[in-house]
Image (cartoon, protein in one colour):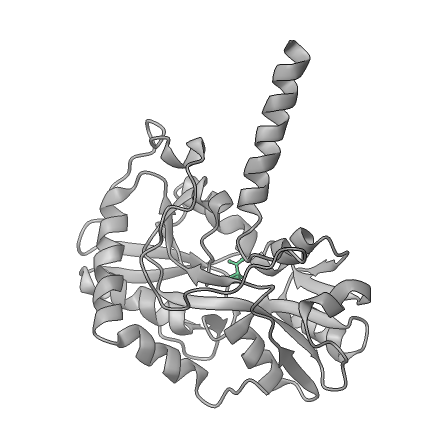
Length: 293
Ligand code: ARG
């Protein structure tokens, strides 16, 4: 009996894990196709109990007061969404996300601040109150929704394959016998892992790209807009897309679980910026001159 219960629990856990790992539909065996690519309100994707549990007591927190500082955490190694530059829109930080963060703060009479950290540290920093919100081209996944609450999505992306110009890779199925590079903790890593291929994970996008340029790996799986930036900065690279293998992903801002006051404030601001075209304009501004080939 006990053994059976344990087994059932294990199977349930495994089923839930599978759900969490299908953020990019990166299942080589599935025939799923990319669907809606427009920005819409996220729909609840399943009825996993973790999703419907109320926030734990004690995690309720308010938004900073008007006149105060709204601190966004990011990982500024993800152009065109966030990068370090001589003079950015918030201190030395610039990019689509940084411009959005600035406007969210200013719409609410707050001063925006950026804390730059490792991508993998962002959700922990939210939980321990080091930052108010995380804006980092962060894809909403079921797994992350267990650790943080997400705003309405503001950008739709997909994983693509960056290869050398002479590569014979034309679809995700061609990854089978290739040396694959990903960035640690990014959805690209989850996709490749989900497909069951071996890979090497790098700390930074630029490190993985260098590996590709130097011929030490055959392909980097990474978010679309960032990939376009890298191929325009590096000679001899191109992008291969495979929408049947990589579903669309949505970027949203994360707040501490239960911080509905701040989440509402952020949602109102994003909604306004989506409606009046600000987000689209910023997207165009920061990707100007970037092409897919
Ligand atoms: N969209 C991907 C993810 O959520 C990559 C995000 C990386 N962002 C960054 N600022 N480094 O996993």
